[in-house]
Each structure stands twice: as structure tokens, then as C-alpha cells.
Length: 547
Image 1 (cartoon, rainbow, N blue to C red):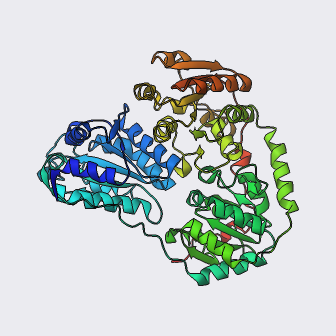
Image 2 (cartoon, helix red, strand yellow):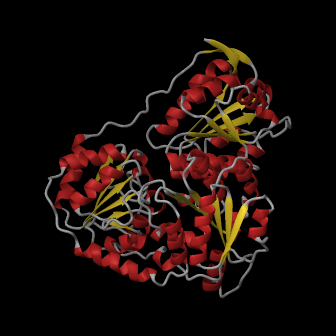
Image 3 (cartoon, rainbow, N blue to C red):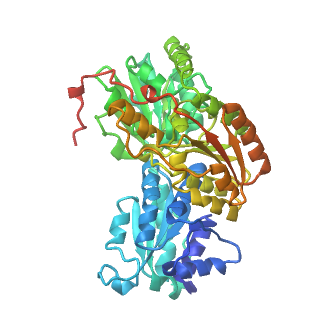
């Protein structure tokens, strides 16, 4: 038992769990937490951006790039609300982010007295976008609550968690017993469901595997299974890189759609499989196997033929062991669909040219963080990725403006690795002031800003679907090159793929924060490859799974 303040107990607990960075802005409600960091002798570093949303986005980017838990902090009320979009995104993407939220004095919580930053039922609010949320009442409770929060974040389906601490509790001393990391709980595998799934896959002639964010720690097992079955592996956004995208069995969304109509079995690993089941359609001729650590996912959209409740790596390994070890011939339909996709991408210039330029200049282990942008929409389908966590996309929240802050966090967590953010001018301006954060903390992210002077996707929708009645799409921008230079940041201009490749190579060579301003015009639409039509089952045949 050690006598220490609640803040010191929380800090020591984080360090005991291998967490040595806090992404946060200081504020009066959390003063004792920052003072504990100041007195930690450098054991814990505080990276302070210019906005609470960026604090949480940095923690999110760090968690997505590493798979390890990350911590952010914010003051109550406005601070929590500022961070909520990032925590909601973390929830959708399965990212283990721990939010430390300040709170007003204990005796005033939920009394409506009008304290600074008061927010009614703040803890209840946070439970809407976290997996677990609790209040730290005293120093004695802090180590156990930190350990439990991190256990919750990492057990089963990884998701964000939150701990709230009142302004008068942070600095109050007490006796606190250290609590080490708690065991991570994952479900045991049911052999009967594995055998049933293996029987379906062994019989299937045209199986397909859909791999999502829950599969990124099962890459070796998935590669072995795909090659055993000669089954294409469909990934999109979060799952990119589970199979190297140059592998003959790695397929993108449009290729998967092309193969879907004739597939006789699908194995969904760590994915909601939303597009395929709700948009592309299913019918009795398609056997569905769901492998997910989250049992709630199994019956979404329709009841699967087999549901395996397991960690992806464990479940896929069990399937491999249950399948006959017989070689299968390469599938002509997969090769034909891949060839079609190559031809289709020819029409997607200049986006593909810019993506090839990024790939050529970026080291193999570099990380691309994609914001919601015209180049990013194509990148989700066609950027070359050879391992998980190297192409980071915002998942189904798809929130504009998240990218630069997430890239800063990825860079902070991966020192020595190249990190590039790609944004449009609209999205970049959400966090443009965080160029100051990159300079203050020497985070050598290269921001590539594609500038068309508009919310380009909004403009296209208005033009194509609303009779070209354009409204609220046009933007007044700074000269992004000069804007970056005003922070004493290195900056380049580019106006075509070749000049982007040259500029990015130069920027990465400096090892310093940088920005590349790319002026672009209207780009060809990729939406025929994204909004894909139903190919199986009648529309009226779709219904949610029965309880």
C-alpha cells in the first residue's frame, strides 16, 4: 500500500500497463493529473494539441497504428463533447482508447448548480460511445479501475473505455494498492461449430472470405486458409493489408461484389459484412459462416448457417486444423474479376496516379492515414498495402476531418516510421491548426492536401442527383503552402503525380513535419465501384435476424 494522490495512482497504473504517453490539453479540472506527470521524472510524456478533438484523435490514431491501448484526457462538459466524435469513431473501429474525463466537484455532480463545464449525466453520456465507463471515487479505487478499464478495452471486441474523476478527487491522497494488468478474456472455441463450418468450406466450390478490422491480428492464419481453399479474401478500409494486396487472392470491394453472385459459401471474419448482406443480397444458395469475437455480430442482418464465437486468429487456426489438407486449383473466376478491376481503374485518373506516387515514395512499412477525400475513396479500393495497420481509414463513421490528428497520434506511437496523411481541403481545415502541434512536438507527419476549392463529394452529389443545384459546397482556402510555412514548417507544391512523388520523397528525407499542397480539379467519380447493386435475393426477402 502506497500513500499517493488519485492522480499519482492513475499515473502509476498506466505506466504498469506499458502506457507512457497521454494525449491531452491541460485544464483546471485535471490540474493534479498534469502535476503528477510533471513530477513523474519523464516516465510519462504529455503531448498537448490545440483542441480536445485532436487529443482523442491522436490516441485513436496511435491505437489503430499499434493495436495497443492509448490514453487521452479532457476536461468535463465541452471537453468531453469535443472528444466524443473521436471516441465514437474508436467505438466503430474497435480501437482500445482510454479516455480520462475530468468532472466537477463530487458533491455537485448532477445537481444542476451551474459549475464550470457542468454536463448532466456525463458518465451516462460516455456509456453511449464506450464499452465501459466508471467513476474513480478515491485513490484506493484508482489502480483497480484502471486495470479493469484496460482489461475491458482489450478483452473480446476491443473498444474505447472511459474513467471519470472529479476535480476534488484527483489531488486527494489515500492508500492505494498497485494492481497489475488483469487477464485478457477471450471466448473458448466450440469444436462442434468449427467442424460444421469446416464441412461447409470443404464442400464449397466457390468460397469467399470477407475479413474486417477484427481479422487484422490473424493475417498469417488467414493467408494459410485462403491458400488452402483458394478462396479470395475481400477487405475494405479497416481490413486492408490482412493479405498483401498484391497477392492473387486479395480482392477489393468491386471484385468481391463481382464474385458474390456466384459464391456458394462465405466466411466472414471480424466484420459486420454490412455492404454484402444488406446491399448485395443473400439467398439460400449462399452458406454463411460468421467468425467473430463479438457474439452480437453473428445474427445481424440474417442468421448464419454457422457462428463461431472466437478470437479471429484462434478461430481461423482451428478451421485450418479441421479442413482436409488437399491442394485446390487456382480459380479462373477470381483471376478474371481481378483483370476486370485493373481495366476499370484505368478510368480513375488522376486519383490512381496520385496513389501510385504515394506508394512509390513511401517506405514499405510507412503508414497512410486517409481522411474522407476523393483520393481516399479510391485508396480504400486500390492503394497497395502489404501488412495490416499500414492503411488507416475511418471506418463506418467516415467522419470528415479526422485524418491529420489521427496521423499525429500514429506518428507519436511509431517514432522512426514514415506517416503520411491524405486529406482534401475541406477535411484538412477541421484540424489545420494542429500544424502547431506537429511542430511543437516534432512529429514528422507529411500532410498531403488535395485542394479543389470545394467539398468535392458534396458538389458531385448535388450536380448528379439534384439537378446541379449547388449550395454550401464552395470553400475559401488559404494558400496551404504558405499556411504551413507560417508555422516554420517545410512545405512543397505539387500539381501532378510526378511532382507529388518528388515532393513526398524530399519531405520524408527531412525527417521533419511537412505539408504538400496539391492543386487539383474535378476528379472522376468512383461511386460505381462503391455503391454496388444487389445481385442476390429479392429486396423484400431481406429481413433482420429473429431474436
